[in-house]
Length: 248
Image 1 (cartoon, one colour):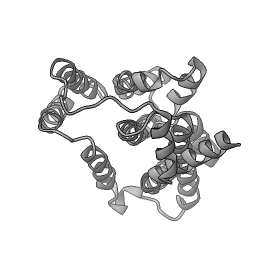
Image 2 (cartoon, one colour):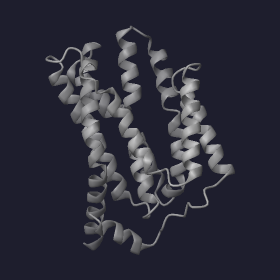
Image 3 (cartoon, one colour):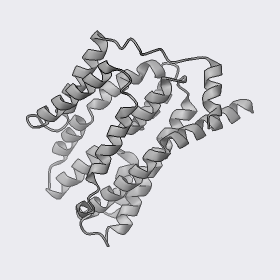
């Protein structure tokens, strides 16, 4: 009984931590839904894509390529390139996921997004990794993305040009806000600026996705060769987990 109550409490904490981002997910899910209709997808096809693909950058690229009658392999290769950064994200999360079974890790991998990664990683620096918390964050974000897509397919008939809403920069602003909580030392700030500049420069020379992978590898190398002395190992005690659940 106490264990179930603690799990519910941790799930609720994850839900509330993700709540500010769910609003952005609904917004951009709606934009995707409207653009998917313009590309020729039906409402159910658009929603199904958000349920089973669940990758914003890949979905936006896919519908753009579908509108241009691109081939299946071109879309698949672009999707892989855009998501290569997940390999580095998974490596950085692996120490926190060692306590989970292979099946649990495999399931959680599906829900990994940039925002889910940032929220959970920030949590793991203060509390032990707990499955209910990760699910609270992951399921709420996934539901928001799918719900937003559905809203977009419904509203798409009244908004023929989603780009005219001028909401593109809000996605960038959300990423900057998430990055802010990770900039806890001068080394991280300098790495953030230099690798960001490198990614922008390489985006002018390389195909989609590769510039992010290379910039991420550089950041990974800096972290490996020059470890942040202020970084501390995440707590793993039951007391810390209990405190994390009580913060709901």
